[in-house]
Image 1 (cartoon, rainbow over the protein chains, first blue to last red):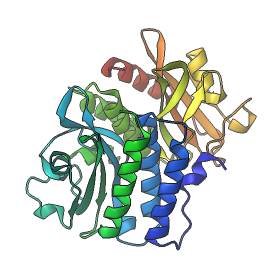
Image 2: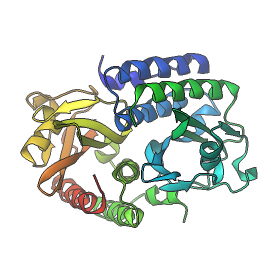
Image 3: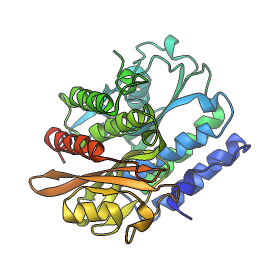
Image 4: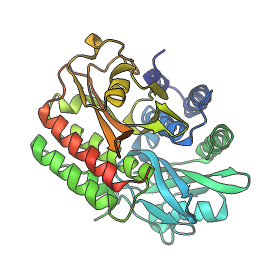
Length: 175
Length: 175
């Protein structure tokens, strides 16, 4: 199998099946490779193609990727690998949805970003967002960030799958 | 302007105008930000959206991004930020189009990858490729890699623009 096939998701699969493929392919891709940049880059591609194989609202995902904790400033997130349009380079811990997830070490599922206090609009088209912290030895080393152009784009099922992915990333990568 | 607008390319622009926007936006995004992961991530997005705003063959670009020299193994490239389908995690210097560009410190423009000795097929759909080394103090720190689903996808104009981008990245980022 060539690598590109990892991110080919068959049409008609359920969200559960799609996330199972994301996790299975991620485990296979991380086997023998602990570099976080490399593993995050492939994971952003997996997530992007996963969402776009699903019906609405998932196919309206317009950004999927990562921010990572700045090694020289541990209260700042820096933009990591992603798929989507150009994004803000830095986010302070505590600011917006990403910064809140990093500060509180807790997943944020935001039905409507326009109602979230202090929301940072990198893209005015984004209407809902999920942010999951990646914790290593109790510290936030990165966050998974996914934006959707529809309100209410993410459910408990997305949260559970992305939290499993965050655990896998923390275990599989050196930061 | 929100960040996403940096990667909105008006329809109908020439390739020259599109690359000028890529370079202008890259310079603006790198201003005050020297983290290479962050800057490569936004640049991959700029390139992806640039090619997809152009007519064929550029709109048939199916991968745009980076490999970087493994800090713990200086004869190996590791996958960096990109847009496109999942890709090979590691490439040895000297292997395939990317490895040849890294080894020879020289841009490779490959009309038909199937005729390139030792081509590494991360994606069987790719038919042509351009790879430009990013040199810092005489060493290859990374390569820019763009694949196209059409034969003969890249011209001298692509080479000149991507070499200018490679110089900008080398000057603007710490590795």
